[in-house]
Amino acid sequence: MQITINNQSYTFDEHVSLEHVVESLSLEDTTGIALALNEEIIPRSQWSETILTNEDKIIIISAVAGG
Image (cartoon, rainbow, N blue to C red):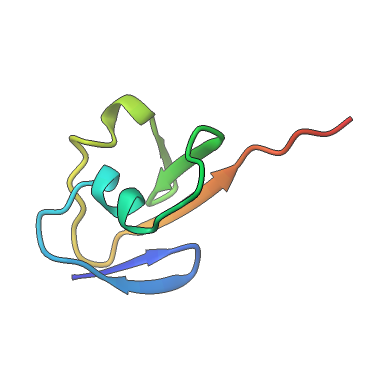
């Protein structure tokens, strides 16, 4: 199944969770990120139960501190 993450195409097995996809990206730190699935923010508490389908689009949003 094809998933787009931040405008890059990735291939995953069917019935994969949003949490699994994030883990497979080997991100250094996920504490400061939010995920939008098909333009809808998904709460972190729902990542493990959110099952993706072909052609879903994920945007990873990183928090940035500044002043």
